[in-house]
Length: 427
Ligand code: GLU
Image (cartoon, rainbow, N blue to C red; front, side, top):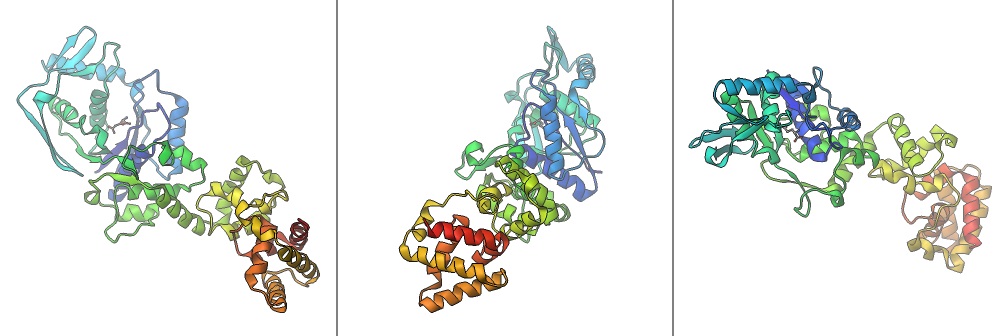
């Protein structure tokens, strides 16, 4: 049975690259009916913090990952590592240097393995110096505790970043020393920005928590991270987690560096927002609005849902929603500079004033009825529809773009629409 693990160090927030590692291990476990385990690599007692661990676990759950068995903590297993190191000293394979314990690397050998992603990787032992297993402060090194624990957990496959390629031969040497069969390793190429540089803040953020905060849906982020390591044969890109689990093949993983393209992630996010249920989006939208300074307690859910219906096909992140829709929630919204010209001519003001009067007197205030008023007016005057649409859109929303003009007006309601058109007419 496949047993894989994710081994975060709780010394910071969950990095996008680590999240991708976690997702692929999870995908492999779920695809094969195996187990996905968590191991907390908190051997650096000074830098490890519970708040980071809590956030990492929360982010993993948020991304839709679940794990089997209780997580193990390396900080609670120092005795085990020391005992394992002593075992190798007793076998003559390691030696003590003060309080530290080092592994004797035998020269003249080739350590080779078949990487699941890159194919054969071989390293000469001449290039590997004696390996510290236990440091003089009694704590284990990463390579040593990693092997002791992966063996203890019965890990069969290890998918991790390319930054660990140089560690793998050192780990294989420990497996040999214990007389154990090493697991299969697969190293995923690192994620770069579209400019080819190491992923950093300027490419759009490096931690999962930032994307959560900006209003990305977890399945969109997870879907995107999957595409940064693998794509199904049929080339489909919108692939909810259950689909990815079904289609995933470890042998199809990319061996070239992945470029993190925020525009593509935004596009995927929009796809998921569009299809999401309002009941799910409403609380998320509310927290975005609160963060943007709106008081949502005073906003009725059904009103918010109507605005959402107009904008869920237009917003790429939930974080953009408050600014796109501010005219629905406040009277003192600003006029966009680029649209002000539509409100500055005497004719446009005259049209707005006359249209406001007509809208004040129409029967229904529905999309269709409002549109009829506008079309009739333009026809009577012999003007192009745009000559009244642009000023009206600016007057009611302050923006040159947004949802359909008449849909917006219907949701805003007669009173606000008429007042806003009169206000714009009066300059
Ligand atoms: N704690 C290590 C890391 O975060 C784990 C590496 C591994 O998967 O072996 O990079």
